[in-house]
Length: 225
Image (cartoon, rainbow, N blue to C red; front, side, top):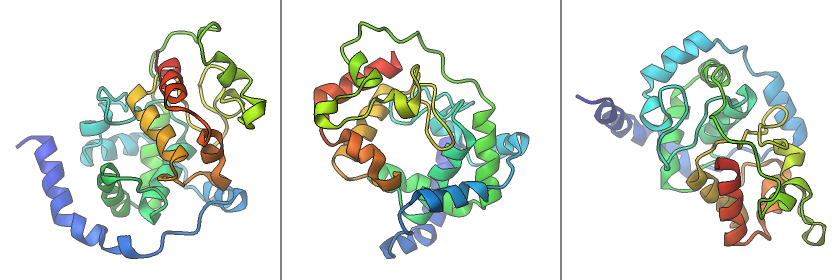
């Protein structure tokens, strides 16, 4: 029996119980103080145990053997900072992130995990190299949006949080370099259209509100290159 089939059978058996609480109100939205406290309380991760959990939970079925993701449907996790991955798992578990049906699998898995499990898996991905990518080109059409933002629309530059090369910022700020472009398009549209709202004080939503579809596609291609 394939790993994919085993995973879906597992989710079918456990999904009803794990998703039974979906009708409940989600956890309180993040504030800087709450997020700081949650990340300060994050257990110390064990990357070796995280690798075993990565195999046991069939994470590679969607995210690749080392989190590199070879599918346009799922994000790359390799090289992501541990606090980012840990926060995402908390968000799935607590109902803060469930923007569409694609999230249901992650909701189920996150509710099966302890916070130590989450920290260990996060440590495993953090220990992997970032996806390979070419240097960003200064002449790219969205270079100004990335590096300087758009003051007329009150859009802050992407680089102020995600780094000049998209390498990621502090704590929970993810890397964008080498990310799957289709995933970045879905993510930016979800923030823009208010179907994803697990960002602190709507930081990403405020950035994305005024972006056009063309700008979103160009940004995704810029970072994926």
